[in-house]
Image (cartoon, rainbow, N blue to C red; front, side):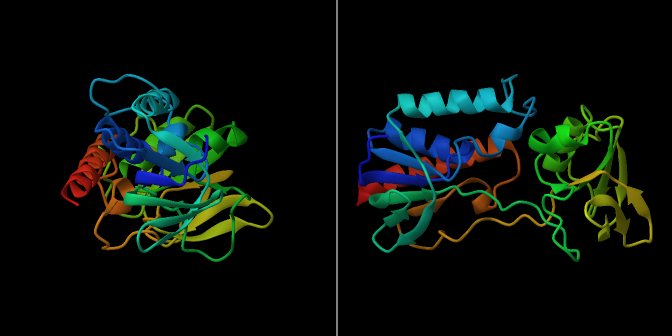
Length: 267
């Protein structure tokens, strides 16, 4: 992008909520920039078939591309880089230098899932993205840890690669339909088994499960480091506690975008 340091609305996070908020504000004639630390799309980038998004039969990357095209068509500028701080008066510290905005929408989503167990198993058989890392476990049994819709979705994605997929649900399952052909068991993880790499999981009830890989969708927390009660700052999507559905994120992005527009019109 051609760098400009002054905006009407800055959106931090370009997932479905952030892109919707940005497009909404830009559609009202405001100058809008949306930052993303990696690439636009958020979780959409890692979704195969999109389920539960009304009127749409598509894949996550294709939906992301459509949303990005709509946002840019409305005049949204996309910036690639991390916003490291948000100072009073809405000065944004970014990798390209400071920028200013009259209103801000924070749509930074969630941290990766994590297990509350001894040791750091990241990169040694514990992962958080089925589409990214699923092929690494082709022909091996895998375990998905989680009890929400996203965990069920990721488990379905893994059936294309793994020899067997088991879901360990710490709480009451919240998904809309039980994943076909996938074993589901209630329990909590006490330890990861293995030395150099994961070989399985030990559950709190004493059960041990064989696993070449473990995909974790528990323990994720909203990335609230930039969120505050400052007038003119609005949160959208997962960081605001929105229900974990794509349509809910889009609706919340619309709400936040309109709120930013109303704030500036009233200022």
